[in-house]
Length: 144
Image (cartoon, rainbow, N blue to C red; front, side, top):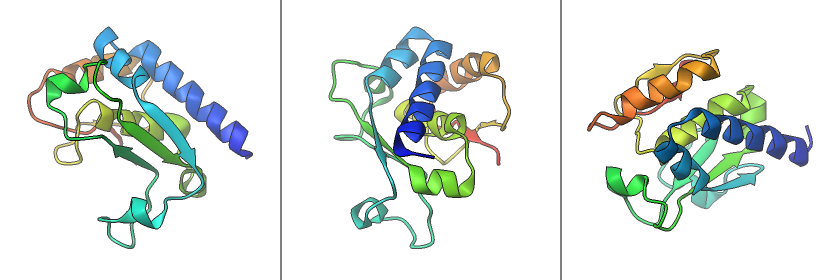
């Protein structure tokens, strides 16, 4: 797959996700810098175990409160997607974009309601609304 084809697939997954979300969450995803790289750099890997394989990396200028995460006037966070790792492990664009968007919406790896692989797009907004109404953080993730 060429870098252009990879980017197109990811862009379409982002677009599809935005269309499926409630307005506030959609605005937060649209107000995110999405970058593409072949593989993570040594700096990207800082703080992760050496055996980690990063598919994406969410970074923000600072830690935002739950309310601030949905505020489009704040500087946007960045999500970098690593094509080499995503393609090598066989993840779909939808799986990786949904996972990383979960970080953007304030979810963490701590307590994860799982969106299983193959979840229909039409079911996603209901899951996202249910999770975003919580005060605890959680991660929307693929169940693979």
